[in-house]
Length: 188
Image 1 (cartoon, rainbow, N blue to C red):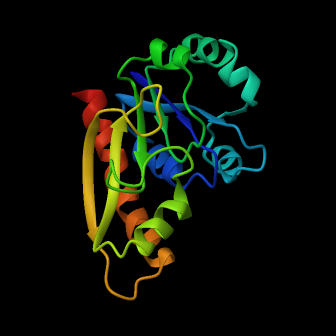
Image 2: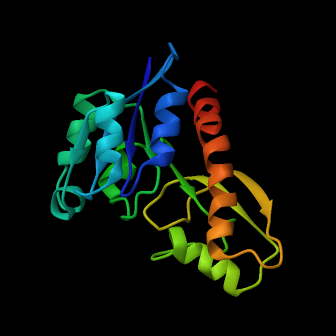
C-alpha cells in the first residue's frame, strides 16, 4: 500500500477529487491532509471524507523537521501539493526526492514563480491575451514551479473569456488529470 499526504492552502477541491479517486483503491490511499490555513476549506472536506487534517504554522514548516517527522511516522510515501502556496523547504525535498508532486494552473514555464497562483495566474493569462492555457503537473524542488515537468494539458481560450472563465476551464483539466497522473506515477 502506497500512502499519500496532500498539502493544500485553500478550498481543497483537487484534494477531494484525489481522495475520492483513491477511495476504493487497494494499492494507494490518502492518509493525511496538511494545511497552513486554519480557515481552509480543506479542513471541512477532510472531516467529511474521514481523512485527518494537520494544521501547521510557518515556523514548524520551514524551520523545523516536525512535518518530515510526522510524514515518516505515518509512513507516507508520496506528498501531493494541491493548491499549496508555500515554498517547500529543503529538508522536505531531501526527505522525499522525486516524491513530491505539484499542480500549477498554467503551462509552465509561463506564469510560474512566487505569487503566481490561482486568480493571479488566470488574470495574467487574460491580460496577455493568450489563446491557450492549461495545467502543469511537476516534481517539486526548492524553487517555485521549477521542478521537472511530468504532464501538461491545454485548453483553448476564446476571445471574450474572462479570468473566471479561464479558471473554470483549467479546473476541469485539474480534476480530470491530476488523480490519473498521480496513480500512474505511484504505480509505475
